[in-house]
Image 1 (tube, protein in one colour):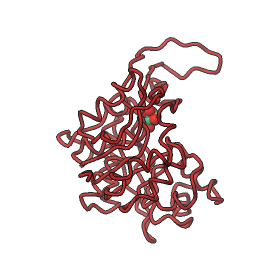
Image 2 (image 1 turned 60 degrees about the vertical axis):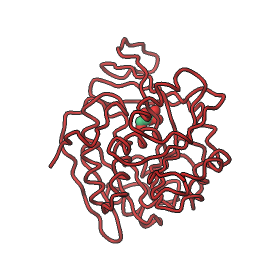
Image 3 (image 1 turned 120 degrees about the vertical axis):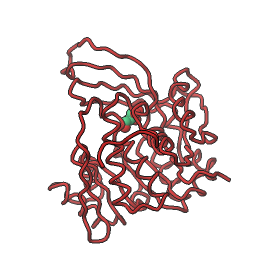
Image 4 (image 1 turned 180 degrees about the horizontal axis):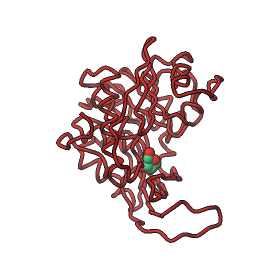
Length: 301
Ligand code: RIB
């Protein structure tokens, strides 16, 4: 029986990062720096973020037989994530090619590789930690039927950060409590559900709630987050920091949020803490390498 209170069913990637002064235009070649491989993948990042803060976390996912599997899982191991349910499959490990410009903005292109095998059958084979978890945390980097199977198996709270926004069964998506999305994703999810996707962040957050989600957390980057629960909409400000790399900041928010939810925080309390963790992560390069431990001092009071 898994002792993990949080179960993440999601992607594991090797992140290949190149730093440039500015993003290239189509057809243009630029010289950059970096080129190193670090641990990434939205599922793995969220699992790592929660575990670094002390939460007991299990990850259900897949890596390939190639050498990238080692750096892709190194920080998960170090953080103490239970990797019993990470299968090695005959594929390549998921790869993200990331370009970070001097102003901190990034572009990310993902080759799913092994993550594409995390389908309904795969998740069913690893049902035990999903069923046992108090919180099941999902993203959009595994096949839709694997996503839906995880929701079906979950007995605890389901937190969904549908990044990237992919087509998933409506009833599975609406199981989210909360649905966690940034402004761009919120618009795409509203489109997917057949609702108007225009308006202010407050409009989008309230409309998502009206679409049938039990609760909504809309992340706004440096502007913080909005939490909608019942009729109440709460704006949570973010500590202001100098951002050097925003890759994986949303994932650190999701992981930190779940780490606090299992401790009994309200959605507003958990989001307030998660904003501080997100602000910490953007002051350092990379995804998982930028996440704080419980011993680190977070920005903001
Ligand atoms: O959210 C950031 C992550 O997106 C990166 O680590 C990359 O692997 C992609 O999955």
